[in-house]
Image (tube, rainbow, N blue to C red; front, top):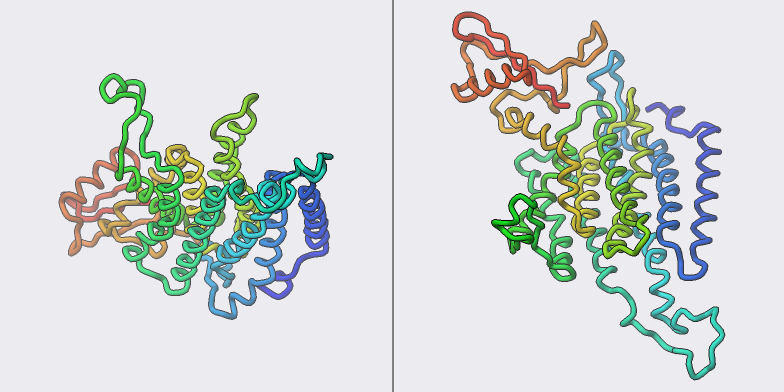
Length: 414
């Protein structure tokens, strides 16, 4: 990233300044009455976009001087560009979520402090409540909010450590489980429901609800492990990490809006408001990052963003009580994980970063090819599995010589 490309153009600067001014005005207006947390979250989402957009541009040369840079191997002109820019987005996001706390609880703060929130109502002196009424404040809601913030901060720190020290896959696989511990503790204390709704076809045999007990917490820990790693696995092409995260976040936000737009109050309204308050700023920083990571990429996102994005989805799904919905939205990532298992578990040699091969003649990406020499052949179970996948059209397998002297499976990471 050259010095000229690291500065904002006049149009970009004016656009970001105008958006920032509008968002600040909207944010200030939400402090009237009992507050408007959802409007405040929308305004802060705009600010998160502006902050992330400018910081990514300004900090690019600094990251390159610190050695956080890489070469885009899928281009003719292989110049160095900044990487680990997901750390910038995570930092902006965490700051925005912290700033949002007083806006999220503004109405509760008013009712829990002197005057009981009746500042605009004319009442007799003997009927005015004075003093602090902390029993009115939703401490359980605040604990959920802070545990979510702690988990996201922890996973962002661990993701940054992975970008800096290149932690081996088998060592970092379980990292998200440790970051999810605050979530699981708060879930157990404040909610504690471990039952699932049984599908109608099985209800005559298992009943309407099935209590999983401790297995439910193992399930949520598994979701916490899989979600960040699944974003990290489906990567290697400009914009793929960020774009898939934006799509998942948009679908989750639409799911939240369906509960908020009902003609009658829904019992899960607070849970989905909580989810939106985390998803909207995430969309803001992700759109700013996608602007710079889209083809041709000017920055790399790094593992920090993949872990950070996956943990945001874990936070909103567990504390929003719709973890099964998240699993449904991660079906493409689940398929990619199963499809990539031969490379992930070392059954098939894996190219660096499991990237597709770049054809310099056509300028296009092609499936990566693994050659097997006559001296090094796959084990019989692996060879059988490759043959089956080839017949299913999931691999391109060519054989040289009698009996398969050379296997050429083409496993594309994305």
